[in-house]
Length: 399
Ligand code: PLP
Image 1: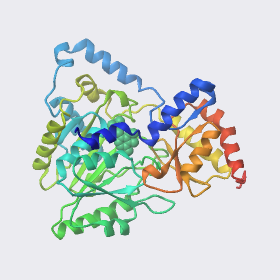
Image 2: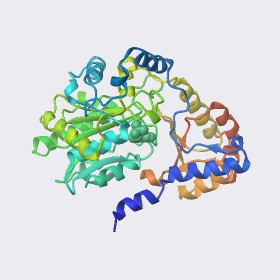
Image 3: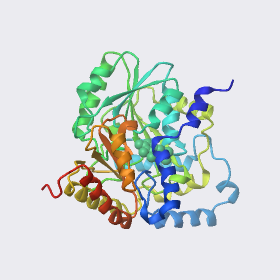
Image 4: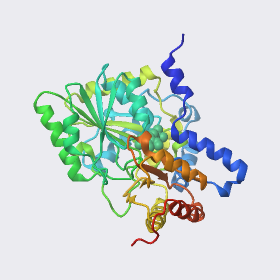
């Protein structure tokens, strides 16, 4: 018999993918413009022009054997140096290239990190709502994911609840800010408090690693700051991806950065290299590694997302929905007007609105709306949202 756990994982689609597939079928039936698909977190704005320029430059000026060849397993040395330099300059951390590992995006960064850190039965605390794949990556590495509910309404980490969830088996705390699915950016105050708890554990002899999953770091609005965890806690690992900031999710490029101040940084880096090797995640796509030094710090035009957020949240609030105001990413978290968010998402489908129930993100009573879509689709969808609100008897223009 082959591995049944893998068979099961490969046979069952995530709720998000299920809805996306439904959307494709529905569009074929009633027309592309009549379905309002808010299911996926696929960036809707093109990469910045500099990505194309950098690609042309690399293809024109570099030796094709190098461009299309293997890099070192952990990534090209000059690329890792450029990233280390960027981190040092922008976040004030003396990052070095020998603690950077190039990956195929945040998914690979997380899978590698879990495999590097966890022994069988080790626990990883994360804050709900959370990205559902965390459970898959963590369990595959032999770990146990321990979701701890974020503070009601704000979805900031509940520090007392995190403290209560720590056991002798806790090996890591995983945070994701800006958050998928809530769009919330964790405040500096909460990060400081969280790190205080972890430092207390360290003083008592238990090292708990802090992992930040950061594909949305640059997607913030109104000058909101995303604290860089290495400045708050030495035992930190950043799992970064260029998928969302540069609108390059299909190119599979990201990295793992290990805090230079970490007590056993060299050993953890060796474990990351070992886990990458064991998983076959070596030598991330060479062409896209090579353009990274030229586009570090750039983003796609995120003003489109900010405008979408403003249009959608203002409209939904005016129809009577309760919305968690997001400071980042491209997701709107909306309270379900009925306790069962699955039923709400199903009713939304009757209005051709494809929105994701937050149960699979570990939270009851909310749905996620991905607003990385065209502003035109948002405008077209508003009458459907209004009709959905009316079907629940929600009051319009409650302000
Ligand atoms: N982590 C979070 C919170 C995400 O939302 C995603 C993708 O949507 C990922 C990780 C995976 O990102 P990547 O495409 O870089 O592997």
